[in-house]
Amino acid sequence: MNKKAITAIAAVLALPMAAGAGPDDDTLVVNEEIEMVTKAAAPAHIADAVDEIMSGWHFRKDETQALQMDDFENPAMIFVDQALDAWNTVEGTEGKSCASCHDDVEESMKGVRAVYPKWSEAAGEVRTLNMQINDCRENHMGAEKWKYTGGKMSAMEALISVQSRGLPVNVAIDGPAQSAWEKGKEMYYTRTGQLELSCANCHEDNYGNMIRADHLSQGQINGFPVYRLKNTKLNTAHARFKGCVRDTRAETYKPGSADFVALELYVASRGNGLSVEAPSVRN
Amino acid sequence: MKLTSLTLALSLAGAAAMAGEVAPKAVQYGEYGEVSASLTGVAGDAASGAVIAGTKSKGNCVACHQVSALADVPFHGEIGPSLDGAGDRWSEEELRGLVANAKMTFEGTMMPAFYKVDGFIRPGDAYTGDAGAEPLPPILTAQEIEDVVAFLATLKEE
Image (cartoon, rainbow over all chains, first blue to last red):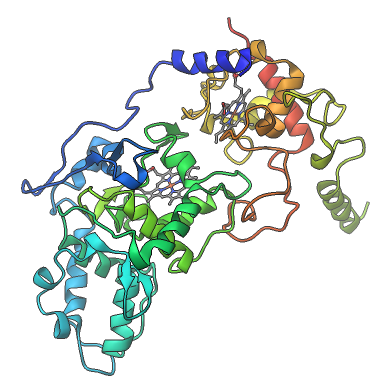
């Protein structure tokens, strides 16, 4: 390294820490009842890159954090209520609702979110929760599929995810899911677009740092779908991925594409051990 | 001049390099990533460079760097080193290389190349998310680079 590079590094070290830099040490308990694991030792498959995994909740301001601590305050819960109606509504040519096959959502969907995306033996592919929802609609209900990132879809995803709140994310990365996982990993480290930035540049190398006005988190998806104060709706992981890839001045991938399914599996696996937090609240 | 030919003249100026300008692919980087020759032959304007460095749709250098001289621009990032004193640490040639393509100085750096037009993975059409056809327009023009370099050269420690 030349002398100037050393000077440059010294200059960084000498910089006073900006207020609020780094993740905080707050504790997330929802409804004074569900204790969330928001920091955990990194799972073995990323331990060479990160020591500790952290929920995006730690990187948000106190006011935003508070909204997620009580369901009466959480603006996302209204969509969960709407999805509960949809759960019980008969639609399509088969005269069925979700409840016709799955009864009580609180019973049947407990633990489901925590293991998705997962390999579907029947379909011979890795499926996200949203893909599974549309498969039920098309093939079991004879109903139209929902737009992948749309309001009805993200609400149903939230309703199903709520049943796993507090349980550890635990997606399988081996066996038949392994090749999708490898592909997602490759995508995570590929520097795309005219800015030549990868997910890892921002969310692995720089979490805790400010990028302009944004406090970079680890880009975890244990809290998805996420209610954003910015657009006042639920946002799916694929919509978020799309925005992040676009911001590298790259051609994005399509929500629901095999590419983003692979990336979702990989990103979800980086959060193995964190609690399912959905629906969480972000700015 | 008629309006149509005026539009044509402007779009030609935008597309092709101006006479006497060094095109992105013709830039000569030295052993340490420095660029000796001015990209335009026209002296950079430090005041204009300061605006470019602080503007989101232009250099947006403050996204990653703290710069005391731009204290009136809100929100400075923490990704790269503070640029305070950059004019003491680096020569004009080195600064030109850093802004045009910092990867020639710092291998693998996260800092984007502002005067590079091809060789990208999934190149996009600016921030639309759509595909872009290489060669892409460089993020900054040759004269904008010269202006930013002139601004950086003014950043001295006390």
